[in-house]
Image (tube, rainbow, N blue to C red; front, side, top):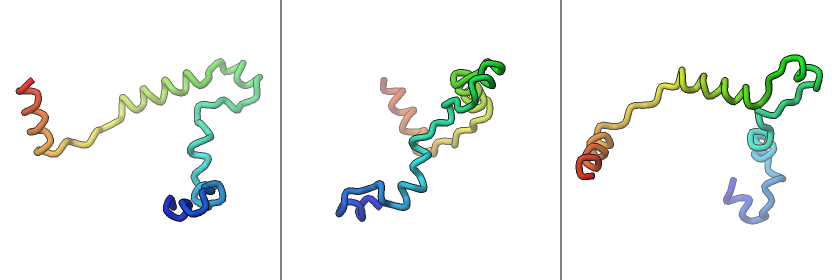
Length: 80
């Protein structure tokens, strides 16, 4: 897509931009609820972000490093 837009310089006219634009511009931490709902519930973006971080820390399983990379890292640490 970048190569095709290079000619015109207009990303906004591309279907790809329209399809994925919300991913960049609409944050999941923006409170769009009515004020009364927010006031009654008493939570907000900070609480949502904290809950999201706690969930990631509790459930994330990182992929194991390749043995070759582990060896190289250990070599660097030993030399330091």
